[in-house]
Image 1: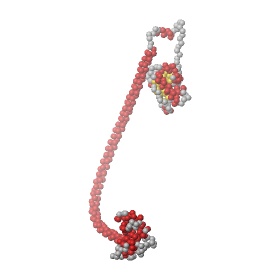
Image 2: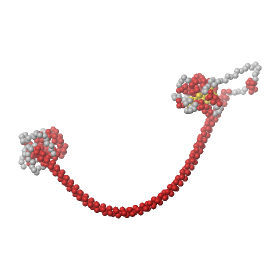
Image 3: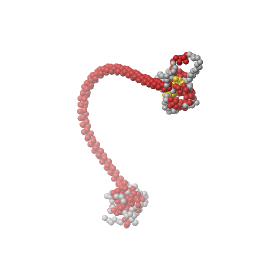
Image 4: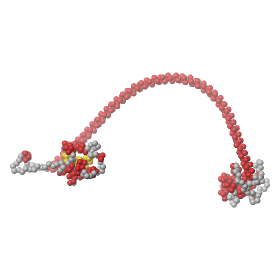
Length: 454
């Protein structure tokens, strides 16, 4: 083997930089081989000979340097002819006889065309482009030959599989013919059995239809009987519910009536007891020095020399003194026709202020006398701004469709006979109605004067 020229001997004089024309397009196998050869030669270069762009690639592991630094190496080979020649001289020198032949512009017939193209691209001898193109043609021819061989192999494999499939299909066809004959025989038997089963089924269906018709008839009878029974049960339950409702209503009515009677009786007895006690305290009657005949004489005869005594003047319904006397009776109940009083005394105010002023004044009367006080207004749906109800005062509003007059008469009728009930209203119908039930009617002016005095 001839001696390998050193890198320093050949670079200045013998190496020629080819700057003519553009870089050729390398086939992929040639490009990969060039990158692998440069990546393997990089560590042999000194630090000054390694371009800055490839110094990081030199530090990669040998088995990863060509893969990770392929792009940087290819770019540097294209852009830096001096670097390409330096590294090419080392690679060609390491290639031995093949490198010498490539340097002389020869391509051995037995050499790998990819290796020849890679070395020619790096060494750039005269005619190197022809070597690269020839290697590319050889690579493409080899690839085409491999593709054709692959196609031939695929065709042979498909033919073999087709022959095998034909043989298998023939066997399967024979099996299927045998199976078809057997199935036809079984089908004949099944048809006979099906005809027999069809006859039996038709007979069973006829019997089932007769049984179904009989069952439907019996069900209809049972349904009618059940419906009649349920209708009778519902009628009896309805009558029972009506009877229970009537009994419950009667019991509730009786309980309510008894409770009302007991309340009225208790209130009457309480009133009578307090009235008797009050009379004993107020009258405190001692032994009289006059006989009953003296009273008869005073009322029915004149006595000589005796001056005529003036009779007491009856108090009218607007006298506040009369109202005070009635409120002083034991367990008295004061019922006030609200708007009848307010519109007579405070007509210039709004309804809200009228109610507020009247209820506040009645609270004072309830606190002074201890009597039960009820004030009745018309129409609760028009109420706005109702003040807090004072202690001892009951505020009522008539329901929709009713009037305060009717509600006052109901309150009076609910009280027991004998209890002092005072109704304040200037409405004559109200006064006459409550008077018939034993109440004391008083005019609105009497209450207004009483409130003004307070």
